[in-house]
Amino acid sequence: MISDDTALRGATPGGAVGGRLPLLDVLRGVAILGTLATNVWLFAGPGGDAAILYGSDELSPFTSFHADPSAATLAEGVFRTAANGTFLALLTLLFGAGLAVQFRSAARRGARWPGPYRWRALFLFVEGTVHFTLVFAGDVLMGYAAVALLVAWLLTRSERARNRVMWVSVSLHVALMGLVTAALVTDPARTSTVPPEAVELYAHGSYADQVAFRLDHFLGLRLEPVLTFGLMVFMFLLGVRLLRAGAFAGDPVGRALRVRLLGWGLGLGVPLTVVTAVAGPDWLLMDRYVVAPLVAVGLIGLVGRLLDRTNGTGPVVTGVSALGRMAMTGYVAQNVLLMFVCYGFGLGLAERMADTGRWWVLVLWAVVSLVLVVSSLLWLRAFRQGPLEALQKKVLSRAR
Image (cartoon, rainbow, N blue to C red; front, side, top):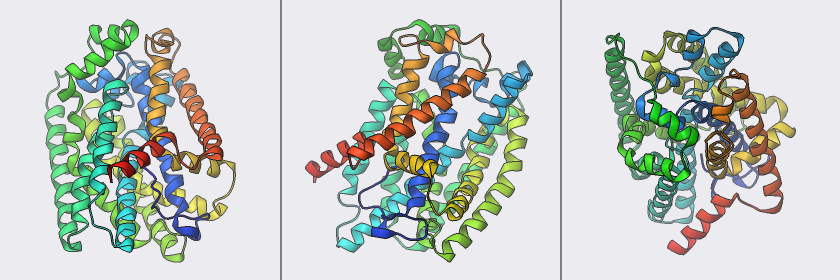
């Protein structure tokens, strides 16, 4: 997810001028806009990110449509189905690819590994902890930091050892998701809604009260990275494998690999996503954490094919790539913006717009997306890195 000064540099998908693979930047930008497409519904829903704690049916894409069928709720269901888990998986895979780039750079310099990378992982964990506490209970950075340390060590092992860990991790993950889903499906009396006190907290409570709520429920709100640890390990290692196979390069090998990713990922993932999304809240885990990663792999092929055809040029590609180059800043900034727009201590739109339908959430996503892209373009005209990327570089340079 996070671009790095040692990452491969370049200017077109057909080559790595100076070393950077532009497809990685575009994919990071796409992933940031995609995580926004998921998170916006949490911020705009009753109880905000407290829904994560209660396993609310609100998290399922078609819950609103089942309760009140309309064009607006149908659009919401389709939009949320397309985003649910897909871009989280894509971010995770890209983080693994970025880790492989850093390992390659360290090897070229003859530097110790993981060596100073431990400081990078520590910085990421601290940043994620701050982000979780002050902004968003669904933070992914803390989990990424823990997995990154494991995968960084695995990069020093044999390919056979990595493959073994990779497939054992995903097998255990799928088995766990299957068992939990089976338990949910066989419990017809189960309901999960955000309690009124949590709804009141996010609609009218102070910012300090919301921070205290996240800290009081730290373990419950941090359950996702624990349950999906095996998936994250798999996606990290898959990112490493795809990078080393050349899937992000612009040569014939890369293009051929992306065609295969597109066919398998979307050809298999999209039908399964439709089935699990329409099946209802009991199938949410299978939809988000088992099927969505397939679609994420297909997205790599799709975005890569589009870039191949456009030669990586145009205002849309340039804007999304700029956001990808400062992905860490974009990820945190989107949640900060949504927090102030939706919660009661800010504009409070989540409560004010609750009775106006669901279209306003789609508009909010589009507006925030535009803000992120435009601000990334303007920032990178004046600076080489995003604010958080520059802070990370400064802190790590002093730590070393």
